[in-house]
Length: 450
Image 1 (tube, helix red, strand yellow):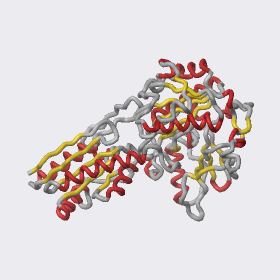
Image 2 (cartoon, rainbow, N blue to C red):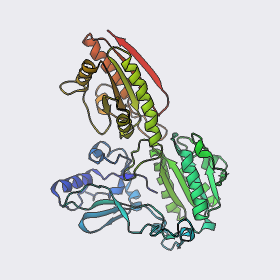
Image 3 (cartoon, helix red, strand yellow):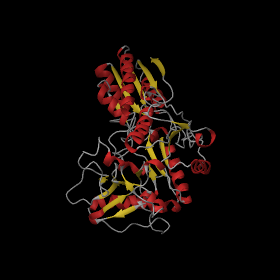
Image 4 (cartoon, rainbow, N blue to C red):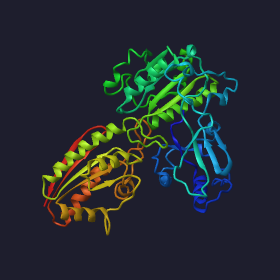
């Protein structure tokens, strides 16, 4: 079910960093109060695949109690091998039966050699290693197994979408339904309407391959969505009452935290119910996987905004086009859109700190580019420069309905800082700001400075 990469506790993270620096291991460090450090899985946040060195800024983003550590599965092997495993039905139902996978008799798959994933297959967290490196953290490889825990006739599955919209949501719903039906012969599949609250406030909708045949051509989600509305006990009561035994939850950070709470309650009750979390993020900020669904569409849409900003900048004397894109903890959309556009002079992302004033600062770079080229385009991810803004604007501890901290607006802040800088130098310039791309709205602000 897990859809998060693992963030170790402070002392455990320090131990890992020390081991990587000196090339050898040691015993787990104690926590500040003298108690043994929790395993890696005791703290979870979603981060980009390249931002492991930046975990210090994220280690406080999400924490769990000692009680949650009971759900953690950590296995160790030779040469520093650590498997951060996925919770499974057999962890709390040791006598759960297994059955042959229907795919072994499926004409489209039975002829494929080694189609099933070996139970011991794992994926390393770090791809690039040195000669004497420890093997490090690994994750369980996804894919079809030869033995499964449900017979086709007993499966009663449900699908729910939560949180904001994302390109490809209907495609994911369609593929889940078609995969369950055509590959695993499941006939009882239901849609939960309007997010988590739909478990207890709406009727379930029966869905079939025929009913979802064309939904991938439509935007949004045919099941409806909402933020919040999570009541763990009500949801699990409803799952239990309706006899649901497979739950597919499509959503982002807050949704997957909710999915984890549902799993814990199901485990507590000893129910034979599988919970699968399907990460929904156009930011592409899930480690290990190659690409999250919706990312390509997000990059394509971002390029249109960059093109507009470039036209605006070229049409004015000392014109600057500033585009803010999504990217709370990672800058994949900003980076890929920048590389695809070729019109961007500066790309600011959360993974790379920057500063405004002095030698090598952003303002000096803007001055130089305007002098050389008479215009420039800046792309900034929404999570970039939060530490800089906090020095002049009090940071808000408010959260959205999904539990994410509300970010300070880096786009508006940069717009005002750039305008004030050139005003102090009595230099004429024009800045056009295109903000909130791929989030809530699109707006322009333009000012001519003398």
